[in-house]
Image: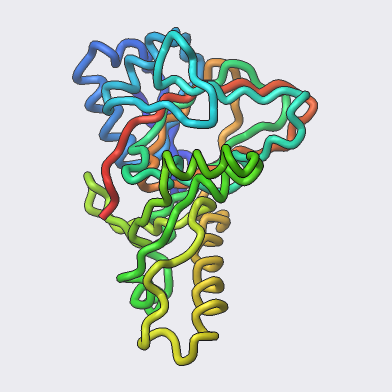
Length: 282
């Protein structure tokens, strides 16, 4: 297996490896997992994976979970089908910087995404290193956010376009989750800036130390949250991947955010993702 670093910030391409072999080869899997923790996102070309092999490889990292809104393959639970067609011009859930499923109490550890069909041009995906985003924050901002927690919501995102009854039922099934604004990576111990498009507000900002008058709470908290979310937009933290059929990306969902660039209509873009259950942030 050869590892080629793609940027100084995040991402590496693996060559000379077949992910299907890693289903049974413990030594190979250990190498891949170590590379993932080091580079945050791994990319591979020409992976002739069956759906069963895709699921089996991802399950080596942990148990898989379905998505309550995106459809899954009926024969392979945990394999979410992210299919975009020319008939879906207004489907815009992916083209925002996000970490998958932070609206869950225990968001995903990571994911394995395979390209089934993609446009001849466009449809790239970008990833940002949120460990680096935290490390490079000004010292006074790190002090300001050290003890903050924030609310993450599926209702305010996936549920926003639903009829109110369906939206409220979705929220009842998945109540808003609260996570630290700065979480600790459960395996590396690194600090991660942990707010994204699913984050609606801080829940403990309004204290005498931060707010002179009640009016301070609204613009002060909102401006700080916008600033923190915008850190993922910085190109120096990013890598961009151009898809081809049978390309695969494996990413650490704790340490990164990603953005699917929607610049390809009218075209088909069919992706299949296995999402790996993670742990409650601390």
